[in-house]
Image (tube, rainbow, N blue to C red; front, top):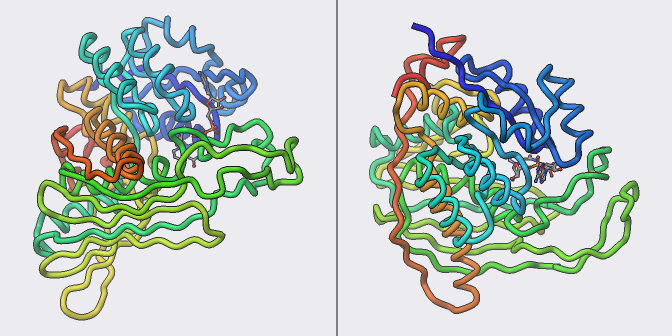
Amino acid sequence: MQYKPVKVAVIGCGMISDIYLENLKNKFSIIDLVGCSDIVSVKAEKQAQKYSIKHMTNEEILSDNEIELVINLTYASAHYEVSRQILEAGKHCYSEKMMCLTMAEADELNRIRKDKNLIFAVAPDTFLGASQQTARMIIDKGLIGEPIQAVVNLSRGYHMIKSSADDAVRKFSVMYEGGGIPYDMGGYYLHQLFNICGAVESVCGYAYTRNAERRYLNPRHEKFNDNFTVKTPNTVCSSIKFRTGMLCSFNLSSEYNTYSEQFEIRGSEGIMYLADPNNFGDKIYIQRKGEKLEFPLCHPYSVNSRGIGAADIAWAIRTNREPRLSFEMGYHALEIINAISECTADGQVKRFTTDFTRPQPISSEYYSGASEERSLFLY
Ligand SMILES: NC(=O)c1ccc[n+]([C@@H]2O[C@H](COP(=O)([O-])OP(=O)(O)OC[C@H]3O[C@@H](n4cnc5c(N)ncnc54)[C@H](O)[C@@H]3O)[C@@H](O)[C@H]2O)c1
Protein backbone atom coordinates (compact mmCIF):
# COMPACT_ATOMS: atom_id res chain seq x y z
CA MET A 1 0.00 0.00 0.00
CA GLN A 2 1.32 3.43 -0.88
CA TYR A 3 0.76 6.32 1.49
CA LYS A 4 -0.40 9.65 0.07
CA PRO A 5 2.40 12.20 0.46
CA VAL A 6 1.66 15.10 2.80
CA LYS A 7 1.63 18.49 1.05
CA VAL A 8 4.11 20.80 2.72
CA ALA A 9 5.11 24.46 2.37
CA VAL A 10 7.95 26.48 3.89
CA ILE A 11 7.69 29.99 5.34
CA GLY A 12 11.07 31.74 5.63
CA CYS A 13 13.69 31.40 2.90
CA GLY A 14 16.89 32.45 4.65
CA MET A 15 20.19 30.75 5.25
CA ILE A 16 18.96 27.40 6.55
CA SER A 17 16.20 27.03 3.95
CA ASP A 18 18.49 25.46 1.33
CA ILE A 19 19.15 22.22 3.13
CA TYR A 20 15.50 21.93 4.21
CA LEU A 21 14.18 22.54 0.70
CA GLU A 22 16.74 20.18 -0.84
CA ASN A 23 15.82 17.36 1.55
CA LEU A 24 12.08 17.96 1.62
CA LYS A 25 12.05 17.94 -2.16
CA ASN A 26 14.26 14.91 -2.74
CA LYS A 27 14.84 12.82 0.36
CA PHE A 28 11.48 11.86 1.78
CA SER A 29 8.79 10.14 -0.30
CA ILE A 30 6.13 11.00 2.29
CA ILE A 31 6.52 14.73 1.58
CA ASP A 32 5.18 16.63 -1.40
CA LEU A 33 6.85 20.04 -1.24
CA VAL A 34 4.50 22.56 -2.80
CA GLY A 35 5.90 26.05 -2.29
CA CYS A 36 7.70 28.64 -0.20
CA SER A 37 7.28 32.24 0.96
CA ASP A 38 9.25 35.00 2.65
CA ILE A 39 8.46 38.57 3.68
CA VAL A 40 11.36 39.47 1.41
CA SER A 41 9.63 38.23 -1.70
CA VAL A 42 12.77 38.02 -3.81
CA LYS A 43 14.26 35.43 -1.43
CA ALA A 44 11.24 33.14 -1.82
CA GLU A 45 11.26 33.67 -5.57
CA LYS A 46 14.90 32.60 -5.79
CA GLN A 47 14.34 29.44 -3.72
CA ALA A 48 11.13 28.56 -5.57
CA GLN A 49 12.99 28.70 -8.86
CA LYS A 50 15.94 26.72 -7.55
CA TYR A 51 13.78 23.88 -6.21
CA SER A 52 11.05 23.98 -8.90
CA ILE A 53 8.27 24.77 -6.44
CA LYS A 54 5.67 27.56 -6.24
CA HIS A 55 6.65 31.05 -5.15
CA MET A 56 3.85 31.90 -2.72
CA THR A 57 2.93 34.51 -0.13
CA ASN A 58 2.33 33.55 3.52
CA GLU A 59 -1.37 34.19 2.93
CA GLU A 60 -1.48 31.88 -0.11
CA ILE A 61 0.14 29.10 1.91
CA LEU A 62 -2.24 29.56 4.83
CA SER A 63 -5.35 29.58 2.66
CA ASP A 64 -4.35 26.60 0.48
CA ASN A 65 -6.67 23.79 1.59
CA GLU A 66 -4.37 21.07 0.28
CA ILE A 67 -1.33 22.06 2.36
CA GLU A 68 -1.40 20.07 5.60
CA LEU A 69 1.97 20.88 7.17
CA VAL A 70 3.82 24.21 7.19
CA ILE A 71 7.47 24.59 8.16
CA ASN A 72 8.39 27.82 9.91
CA LEU A 73 12.00 28.74 9.06
CA THR A 74 11.78 32.39 10.04
CA TYR A 75 14.08 33.79 12.75
CA ALA A 76 13.21 33.32 16.43
CA SER A 77 11.55 36.71 16.96
CA ALA A 78 9.04 35.88 14.18
CA HIS A 79 8.40 32.27 15.25
CA TYR A 80 5.45 32.98 17.53
CA GLU A 81 3.47 35.09 15.10
CA VAL A 82 4.09 32.83 12.09
CA SER A 83 3.40 29.58 13.99
CA ARG A 84 0.26 31.08 15.53
CA GLN A 85 -1.02 31.95 12.05
CA ILE A 86 -0.19 28.46 10.75
CA LEU A 87 -2.09 26.80 13.61
CA GLU A 88 -5.02 29.26 13.37
CA ALA A 89 -5.24 28.29 9.69
CA GLY A 90 -5.78 24.67 10.81
CA LYS A 91 -2.41 23.34 9.62
CA HIS A 92 0.15 21.19 11.39
CA CYS A 93 3.32 23.14 12.12
CA TYR A 94 7.02 22.37 12.41
CA SER A 95 8.98 25.36 13.71
CA GLU A 96 12.67 25.99 13.85
CA LYS A 97 13.93 26.49 17.42
CA MET A 98 13.13 28.15 19.78
CA MET A 99 9.36 27.95 19.42
CA CYS A 100 8.92 31.58 20.60
CA LEU A 101 10.41 34.03 23.07
CA THR A 102 8.32 33.80 26.25
CA MET A 103 6.50 31.08 28.18
CA ALA A 104 3.26 33.08 27.82
CA GLU A 105 3.60 32.83 24.03
CA ALA A 106 4.40 29.12 24.31
CA ASP A 107 1.29 28.59 26.46
CA GLU A 108 -0.82 30.36 23.86
CA LEU A 109 0.57 28.17 21.05
CA ASN A 110 -0.13 25.13 23.20
CA ARG A 111 -3.71 26.22 23.72
CA ILE A 112 -4.33 26.71 19.99
CA ARG A 113 -2.76 23.43 18.89
CA LYS A 114 -4.75 21.54 21.53
CA ASP A 115 -8.03 23.30 20.64
CA LYS A 116 -7.53 22.47 16.99
CA ASN A 117 -6.04 19.02 17.55
CA LEU A 118 -2.94 19.82 15.50
CA ILE A 119 0.66 18.67 15.64
CA PHE A 120 3.08 21.42 16.59
CA ALA A 121 6.66 20.24 16.86
CA VAL A 122 9.89 22.15 17.29
CA ALA A 123 13.44 21.74 15.97
CA PRO A 124 16.09 20.51 16.23
CA ASP A 125 15.57 17.22 14.44
CA THR A 126 19.28 16.38 14.36
CA PHE A 127 18.81 13.96 17.27
CA LEU A 128 17.05 11.64 14.82
CA GLY A 129 20.33 11.28 12.89
CA ALA A 130 22.85 8.44 12.91
CA SER A 131 25.27 9.90 15.43
CA GLN A 132 22.78 10.81 18.12
CA GLN A 133 20.62 7.71 17.71
CA THR A 134 23.76 5.60 18.07
CA ALA A 135 24.58 7.54 21.25
CA ARG A 136 21.12 6.82 22.58
CA MET A 137 21.53 3.12 21.79
CA ILE A 138 24.83 3.09 23.71
CA ILE A 139 23.03 4.45 26.77
CA ASP A 140 19.91 2.28 26.36
CA LYS A 141 22.06 -0.86 26.13
CA GLY A 142 24.01 0.16 29.22
CA LEU A 143 27.39 0.22 27.47
CA ILE A 144 28.67 2.98 29.76
CA GLY A 145 26.54 1.93 32.73
CA GLU A 146 24.40 4.44 34.58
CA PRO A 147 24.80 8.04 33.31
CA ILE A 148 26.09 10.08 36.24
CA GLN A 149 27.24 13.34 34.72
CA ALA A 150 27.04 15.14 31.39
CA VAL A 151 29.42 17.86 30.30
CA VAL A 152 28.61 20.50 27.70
CA ASN A 153 31.27 23.14 27.02
CA LEU A 154 30.92 25.13 23.81
CA SER A 155 32.91 28.18 22.71
CA ARG A 156 32.16 29.86 19.41
CA GLY A 157 32.60 33.30 17.87
CA TYR A 158 29.49 35.09 16.58
CA HIS A 159 31.09 38.33 15.54
CA MET A 160 29.29 39.14 12.32
CA ILE A 161 32.38 38.81 10.21
CA LYS A 162 30.84 36.91 7.32
CA SER A 163 31.06 38.43 3.89
CA SER A 164 28.47 36.70 1.73
CA ALA A 165 25.97 38.81 -0.21
CA ASP A 166 23.20 37.39 1.95
CA ASP A 167 24.67 39.13 4.98
CA ALA A 168 23.47 42.44 3.60
CA VAL A 169 19.80 41.48 3.91
CA ARG A 170 19.91 38.88 6.63
CA LYS A 171 18.75 39.66 10.13
CA PHE A 172 21.45 38.26 12.39
CA SER A 173 19.18 36.08 14.43
CA VAL A 174 21.99 35.10 16.79
CA MET A 175 22.15 38.72 18.04
CA TYR A 176 18.42 39.09 18.72
CA GLU A 177 15.91 37.90 21.31
CA GLY A 178 15.61 34.12 21.34
CA GLY A 179 18.52 33.66 18.94
CA GLY A 180 21.72 33.86 21.01
CA ILE A 181 23.95 30.83 21.52
CA PRO A 182 22.06 29.49 24.58
CA TYR A 183 18.92 29.31 22.41
CA ASP A 184 20.62 28.61 19.11
CA MET A 185 23.08 25.86 20.08
CA GLY A 186 21.62 25.16 23.54
CA GLY A 187 18.55 23.66 21.89
CA TYR A 188 20.64 20.99 20.14
CA TYR A 189 22.36 19.85 23.31
CA LEU A 190 19.17 19.89 25.35
CA HIS A 191 17.21 17.88 22.79
CA GLN A 192 19.90 15.23 22.63
CA LEU A 193 20.05 15.11 26.44
CA PHE A 194 16.23 14.84 26.56
CA ASN A 195 16.42 12.06 23.96
CA ILE A 196 18.95 10.19 26.07
CA CYS A 197 17.92 11.01 29.63
CA GLY A 198 14.40 12.46 29.63
CA ALA A 199 13.18 15.54 31.47
CA VAL A 200 14.97 18.01 33.74
CA GLU A 201 14.14 18.47 37.41
CA SER A 202 15.90 21.77 38.17
CA VAL A 203 18.47 24.28 37.00
CA CYS A 204 20.62 27.05 38.42
CA GLY A 205 23.26 29.25 36.89
CA TYR A 206 24.20 32.51 35.29
CA ALA A 207 23.63 34.09 31.89
CA TYR A 208 24.73 37.49 30.61
CA THR A 209 25.32 39.52 27.51
CA ARG A 210 28.99 40.29 27.15
CA ASN A 211 29.77 43.30 25.01
CA ALA A 212 26.14 44.24 24.42
CA GLU A 213 27.00 47.49 22.62
CA ARG A 214 29.06 46.72 19.54
CA ARG A 215 29.63 47.60 15.90
CA TYR A 216 29.10 45.95 12.55
CA LEU A 217 32.50 44.52 11.67
CA ASN A 218 32.19 43.61 8.01
CA PRO A 219 33.48 46.41 5.76
CA ARG A 220 31.22 45.14 2.97
CA HIS A 221 28.09 45.50 5.09
CA GLU A 222 26.01 48.60 4.44
CA LYS A 223 26.04 49.33 8.17
CA PHE A 224 29.79 48.85 8.60
CA ASN A 225 31.02 50.40 11.85
CA ASP A 226 27.47 51.48 12.90
CA ASN A 227 26.51 50.67 16.49
CA PHE A 228 24.01 48.01 17.45
CA THR A 229 22.84 46.37 20.67
CA VAL A 230 22.95 42.61 21.25
CA LYS A 231 19.56 41.64 22.67
CA THR A 232 20.24 38.12 23.88
CA PRO A 233 22.45 36.48 26.48
CA ASN A 234 25.61 35.24 24.77
CA THR A 235 27.33 33.54 27.69
CA VAL A 236 25.88 30.92 30.02
CA CYS A 237 27.32 28.87 32.86
CA SER A 238 24.82 26.55 34.54
CA SER A 239 24.08 23.28 36.31
CA ILE A 240 21.17 21.07 35.32
CA LYS A 241 19.72 18.19 37.32
CA PHE A 242 17.80 15.56 35.33
CA ARG A 243 14.98 13.56 36.90
CA THR A 244 17.09 10.42 36.51
CA GLY A 245 19.56 12.04 38.92
CA MET A 246 22.13 12.79 36.20
CA LEU A 247 23.86 16.15 36.69
CA CYS A 248 24.93 18.28 33.76
CA SER A 249 27.37 21.11 33.53
CA PHE A 250 26.03 23.31 30.71
CA ASN A 251 28.28 26.13 29.52
CA LEU A 252 28.06 28.01 26.24
CA SER A 253 29.44 31.28 24.91
CA SER A 254 29.68 32.91 21.49
CA GLU A 255 32.29 35.43 22.68
CA TYR A 256 35.49 33.63 21.70
CA ASN A 257 37.47 33.98 18.51
CA THR A 258 38.25 30.30 18.63
CA TYR A 259 36.09 27.20 18.44
CA SER A 260 36.06 24.55 21.11
CA GLU A 261 33.56 21.89 22.02
CA GLN A 262 33.13 19.19 24.63
CA PHE A 263 30.04 16.98 24.90
CA GLU A 264 30.41 13.94 27.14
CA ILE A 265 28.24 11.62 29.13
CA ARG A 266 30.08 9.99 31.96
CA GLY A 267 28.63 6.71 33.20
CA SER A 268 29.39 4.28 36.01
CA GLU A 269 31.13 1.95 33.51
CA GLY A 270 32.60 4.32 30.96
CA ILE A 271 32.55 7.65 29.18
CA MET A 272 30.82 8.46 25.90
CA TYR A 273 32.26 11.31 23.83
CA LEU A 274 29.53 12.73 21.65
CA ALA A 275 30.00 15.12 18.77
CA ASP A 276 28.41 18.38 17.70
CA PRO A 277 24.67 17.74 18.15
CA ASN A 278 24.02 20.12 15.28
CA ASN A 279 25.30 17.39 12.93
CA PHE A 280 24.02 14.04 11.75
CA GLY A 281 27.03 11.82 11.19
CA ASP A 282 29.80 12.94 13.50
CA LYS A 283 31.96 10.31 15.18
CA ILE A 284 31.27 8.96 18.65
CA TYR A 285 33.83 7.46 20.99
CA ILE A 286 33.51 5.40 24.11
CA GLN A 287 36.07 4.63 26.76
CA ARG A 288 35.71 1.76 29.16
CA LYS A 289 38.69 1.24 31.42
CA GLY A 290 41.37 1.91 28.84
CA GLU A 291 41.64 3.33 25.39
CA LYS A 292 39.12 5.74 23.91
CA LEU A 293 37.72 3.95 20.84
CA GLU A 294 35.51 5.03 17.97
CA PHE A 295 32.08 3.41 18.10
CA PRO A 296 30.65 2.65 14.65
CA LEU A 297 27.54 4.61 13.74
CA CYS A 298 24.83 2.03 13.26
CA HIS A 299 21.74 4.07 12.43
CA PRO A 300 20.36 5.67 9.28
CA TYR A 301 20.62 9.35 8.26
CA SER A 302 24.32 10.04 8.66
CA VAL A 303 24.38 12.97 6.22
CA ASN A 304 22.68 16.33 6.76
CA SER A 305 19.02 15.28 6.83
CA ARG A 306 17.37 18.44 8.18
CA GLY A 307 13.70 18.03 7.44
CA ILE A 308 13.69 14.49 8.88
CA GLY A 309 11.56 15.83 11.77
CA ALA A 310 8.96 17.06 9.29
CA ALA A 311 9.11 13.71 7.46
CA ASP A 312 8.57 11.94 10.78
CA ILE A 313 5.52 14.15 11.38
CA ALA A 314 4.23 13.33 7.90
CA TRP A 315 4.57 9.58 8.61
CA ALA A 316 2.89 10.13 11.99
CA ILE A 317 -0.04 11.87 10.29
CA ARG A 318 -0.49 9.09 7.73
CA THR A 319 -0.04 6.18 10.13
CA ASN A 320 -1.86 7.78 13.04
CA ARG A 321 0.96 7.67 15.57
CA GLU A 322 2.69 10.28 17.74
CA PRO A 323 5.58 12.13 16.06
CA ARG A 324 9.01 11.77 17.65
CA LEU A 325 9.51 15.55 17.91
CA SER A 326 7.07 17.17 20.24
CA PHE A 327 5.72 20.46 21.48
CA GLU A 328 6.61 19.36 25.00
CA MET A 329 10.33 18.91 24.26
CA GLY A 330 10.47 22.33 22.61
CA TYR A 331 8.65 23.87 25.57
CA HIS A 332 11.00 22.22 28.05
CA ALA A 333 14.08 23.51 26.19
CA LEU A 334 12.73 27.06 26.16
CA GLU A 335 11.81 27.05 29.83
CA ILE A 336 15.26 25.77 30.83
CA ILE A 337 17.15 28.41 28.84
CA ASN A 338 14.84 31.20 30.02
CA ALA A 339 15.15 29.92 33.60
CA ILE A 340 18.94 30.35 33.55
CA SER A 341 18.43 34.08 32.92
CA GLU A 342 15.83 34.18 35.73
CA CYS A 343 18.32 32.51 38.13
CA THR A 344 20.83 35.22 37.29
CA ALA A 345 18.30 37.86 38.28
CA ASP A 346 16.94 36.33 41.49
CA GLY A 347 19.60 33.83 42.60
CA GLN A 348 17.04 31.03 42.96
CA VAL A 349 17.15 27.41 41.79
CA LYS A 350 14.39 26.84 39.21
CA ARG A 351 12.33 23.64 39.39
CA PHE A 352 10.21 22.18 36.60
CA THR A 353 7.08 20.10 36.59
CA THR A 354 6.69 19.80 32.82
CA ASP A 355 7.40 16.47 31.20
CA PHE A 356 7.36 14.77 27.81
CA THR A 357 7.27 11.30 26.37
CA ARG A 358 10.81 10.26 25.52
CA PRO A 359 10.85 9.92 21.72
CA GLN A 360 10.83 6.41 20.26
CA PRO A 361 14.31 5.47 19.01
CA ILE A 362 14.91 4.94 15.32
CA SER A 363 15.53 1.37 14.20
CA SER A 364 19.10 0.49 13.32
CA GLU A 365 18.03 -2.28 10.95
CA TYR A 366 17.79 -0.16 7.78
CA TYR A 367 20.56 2.28 7.16
CA SER A 368 21.07 2.94 3.49
CA GLY A 369 19.28 3.65 0.25
CA ALA A 370 15.51 4.00 0.06
CA SER A 371 15.05 1.64 3.01
CA GLU A 372 16.32 4.41 5.32
CA GLU A 373 12.88 6.00 5.19
CA ARG A 374 11.31 2.77 6.44
CA SER A 375 12.90 3.65 9.78
CA LEU A 376 10.48 6.59 9.99
CA PHE A 377 7.48 4.53 8.92
CA LEU A 378 8.27 2.08 11.68
CA TYR A 379 7.69 3.19 15.24
N1 LIG B 1 21.56 29.36 9.79
C1 LIG B 1 21.80 28.18 10.35
O1 LIG B 1 22.90 27.59 10.22
C2 LIG B 1 20.72 27.49 11.11
C3 LIG B 1 20.88 26.14 11.39
C4 LIG B 1 19.86 25.46 12.01
C5 LIG B 1 18.74 26.14 12.43
N2 LIG B 1 18.61 27.47 12.19
C6 LIG B 1 17.39 28.13 12.68
O2 LIG B 1 16.56 28.39 11.55
C7 LIG B 1 15.86 29.63 11.74
C8 LIG B 1 16.18 30.53 10.58
O3 LIG B 1 17.57 30.75 10.56
P1 LIG B 1 18.30 31.37 9.31
O4 LIG B 1 19.74 31.33 9.62
O5 LIG B 1 17.82 30.74 8.06
O6 LIG B 1 17.77 32.89 9.43
P2 LIG B 1 17.68 33.98 8.28
O7 LIG B 1 17.61 35.27 8.98
O8 LIG B 1 18.74 33.75 7.26
O9 LIG B 1 16.27 33.65 7.57
C9 LIG B 1 15.03 33.88 8.14
C10 LIG B 1 14.08 34.27 7.02
O10 LIG B 1 12.77 34.42 7.54
C11 LIG B 1 12.16 35.50 6.84
N3 LIG B 1 11.03 35.98 7.63
C12 LIG B 1 11.04 36.62 8.83
N4 LIG B 1 9.80 36.90 9.24
C13 LIG B 1 8.95 36.39 8.30
C14 LIG B 1 7.54 36.33 8.18
N5 LIG B 1 6.72 36.88 9.09
N6 LIG B 1 7.03 35.74 7.08
C15 LIG B 1 7.84 35.21 6.13
N7 LIG B 1 9.19 35.22 6.22
C16 LIG B 1 9.74 35.81 7.28
C17 LIG B 1 13.28 36.50 6.68
O11 LIG B 1 13.01 37.45 5.69
C18 LIG B 1 14.45 35.60 6.35
O12 LIG B 1 14.59 35.40 4.96
C19 LIG B 1 16.31 30.17 13.10
O13 LIG B 1 15.37 29.81 14.07
C20 LIG B 1 17.63 29.46 13.36
O14 LIG B 1 17.87 29.25 14.75
C21 LIG B 1 19.56 28.16 11.51
